[in-house]
Amino acid sequence: REGGGSAAGHDIVIDDVSARAFRALLLFLYSHNLPEAEDFGKGLEVGEMALVADRFQALALYEHCMQQFRQGLKVDNAIERLVQAHESGLDALQQAAWDFVLRHYHAIQTEAGPTIDMLTLPLSLELLKKLPFP
Image (tube, rainbow, N blue to C red; front, side, top):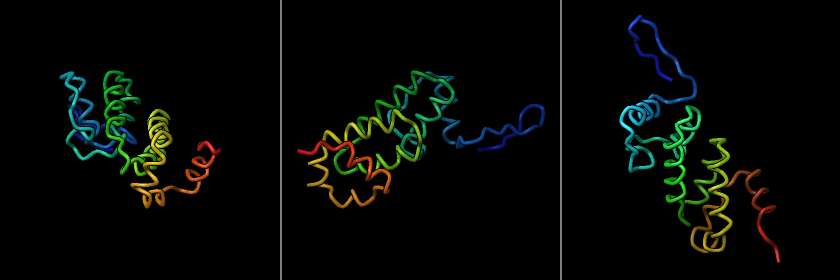
């Protein structure tokens, strides 16, 4: 949320969008350049740009953000990113994180076990429902 002077001297307020994310969106809309870094080199939160792209219906940018989110998922960060995706409220981010966690759950337990403590109670319960039991 940021107010800036417009030509008429009035502030423009866009709720729920950081100034950094909005600047990145404008840069994309005007230049059509897709950023290489997931955070656009602007220190954005995980999935923040995907949310903004979804909200403003910038489909190419949204797809690019989703691809970068998926590529950024690793065994050592998957649980943290699942929590962040859950907090974002964007279903596609959550699904991408869940898909990775479920595919690599054994490796996550073995190599990044303590990160599982980051799960909230609702996410822990959802994990138990999703895990295949013998």
